Length: 445
Image 1: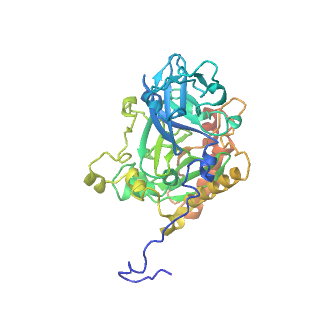
Image 2: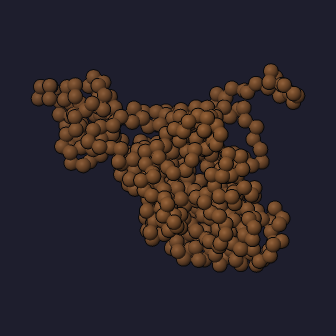
Image 3: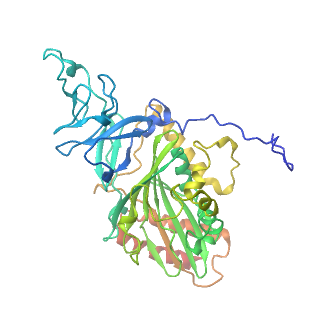
């Protein structure tokens, strides 16, 4: 039992956490098998030039390349002949040749040629180089590392093409920590008030200094990590998509809450991709459009490899500067390569963190029991998956409306559910329908 007393460090040393159920992503582990049932972006397409690139993904050493015909290959890094790394392979018109003995592999791993062997030796009929499926989309390279007969569709989200002037700009950042810590950060909306507004400096707009009512309502693709605030004459509802296993969509932190708006328009869509148990990628696309970037100050060249125009997302600032104004990178990475969760003392605001752990654990157990995981992307008949990320700003009819915290929280949930219930509408019509519903809700309070 912990001892509550001054100077009690001797009695209250952190317990050691040996539970790796959600942090070990290696092959043949429960979480590793689960994650291998999904597509994961693992690098920017612009990072791949004329030479092979060694990569590490889900605890496996791989090499990615584009052959002379333009096809992409993602192979086990070490040649099955004598183990030489294919990062030193020679790109061919089709596939890649090992530099050591010239063994020639197609992008699907089949052996095309073993030039040092006699013609009657049929090695290539009996062996192949391990290979994974790879796709290029939205400036990102995606890998699927699971059973090929269970390959899911590459998800396409409705947020990618709304509004009409939306421009997707890819970026990535490496974090020396478990993928789960990145996921949990997105599931923790109260940190936006403290880390980004109150404690560490105004990284978000002043509206975020108002402590919100939190909620985590389920959606058909996961749940919303949401916060509802009363800011001056307005109610401000901000809700992020948490999509299993590792996708998050987040509105920007720039809303000044000075005029009404209703938008299903995220600023970022990101994947938290494990490179191995202790290193991860924060990778995805920024949505540059007239809603997120009304003054045009955000430019595509501000995003890229280890590059995003928001303070505290990488570890490249001087250490003392990071101490004075920490950001997400510092908060997440400083927990350790793998956070010691047995030493935590969770509070009432950690419901989203508890929820994402529970949902992931349930999904991992289901896959390892032999079930095919529900692809929570729910592709519609038009081939596009509906999403629910949003922010709403609505003017209050009187200053004393929604002063009660429970009433404010209930209003926020009803407003969020309006986005869920109108998902089948085209995005622009959906926003109009949601605005009408939210104003009706406000008339009832």
